[in-house]
Length: 153
Image (cartoon, rainbow, N blue to C red; front, side, top):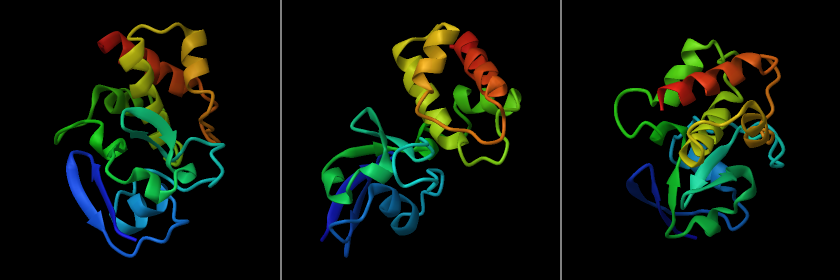
């Protein structure tokens, strides 16, 4: 199967895609967008979160064929340029990046939250990030990063 889609503002045509292949597999293994992580393959951890036509999704749960003709933005595309996006900068500055496995999904989820709600409460932050699991940080530095990004928005 041939898949045509836009990833981070660039058009791609990918040949030989198997019908059961996930969008995550296509992004990582066929296109080289390694930011989205393959952690659970069950939509439970959020490490593979991307935007699909502006909607936050777990790319491990999206069949590649569902991305036909659609627009995908990964953690690499959040900044829209050479430098880091303010959310990415906040994660680095707050020390919210440990092993890095959960970080891409958390950054995309935070970006999504702040685009909808620039000044969220702690409860709103926790709710927005509830689908993302981290095994290293204990979450406090992640919350600090979201608060820091919100202050700068």
